[in-house]
View (cartoon, rainbow, N blue to C red):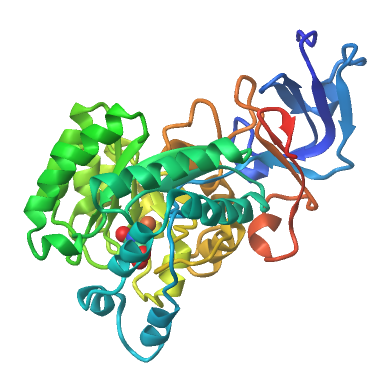
Length: 408
Ligand code: DI6
Ligand code: FE
């Protein structure tokens, strides 16, 4: 092995999330060598060369767990206002859909978010991103979707990009203009979809503000036929697609997402076997969002057994948003993936690392500890990756490296 370019070696660690992927493949004592921004080598500690090259910093992890930086692959963290009143309403019997149909829900956040300046939104968004980062998150996907017109959707995407420039975190932006029908369109949802396809998508693409395009396929949002128009336009513009599918009912959105080779289909509580099969064939990642299930007190569980049977990769994300998931913790979502959805801690761990990377189209560069990948790494006050999901509020990062550099 050529160690000449190594800048840092972390040795005597429990290295999880390597090439094999399984927690059972935890390498301990293991070591990782970094050259600049990338991982140069990972393997058993005993295989390290006797002497590191001159100038290479050597860190003894004392047996601590070393993982890839965590990836939150589904958030809506740019918003203004608060929806605590809706929480109270839901506790007295109103459903999420009832509130949305009465003009609350997403639209109430749209009103507050349109009224907020870009600077105000950036302050709010950075606070939320920082909370995720404090748990070892080094990559965050951020959706628009509370603007719902050209000016405001682009405003949200600029704020999302700015979060990635101001903080030491990788941000992937997703245009979610097809999140709800804007109030000024009344029930003219087809007209709004025309605006999304003809104005908002091309402008976001031309400005380089969107890495992907998402939509909400639901009775209270958009039909599969409308989503198909959005996806067709997105693909014409060379943008990847993903979909909020089967959250509250089965609209066959997962199959539609698969038809467009979507990176992911997200939520999926109501997906059927045909949808799961289609996702498997297309390589579409299932992104599960336990906090939304928990916070809306849903009862329909996503079909983990079917996803396993058909070998659909499962990612776990926070869905951080003001209405259905105001919970800024990816670790709590890992815990809930196990307690509420019946996933194993090992699956939850893969869900916030390798599969989350795939859900963002970053599988080649992020999500595992392998030579050549970006050196986004977290050293924990824990020894086994299952600990990340098996408790809450006690496990925390000791050191976070992003692109080989210590987080300030
Ligand atoms: N599903 C969700 O859970 C979020 N968006 C979506 O399509 C909720 C967004 C909100 O209620 O503000
Ligand atoms: Fe969402």
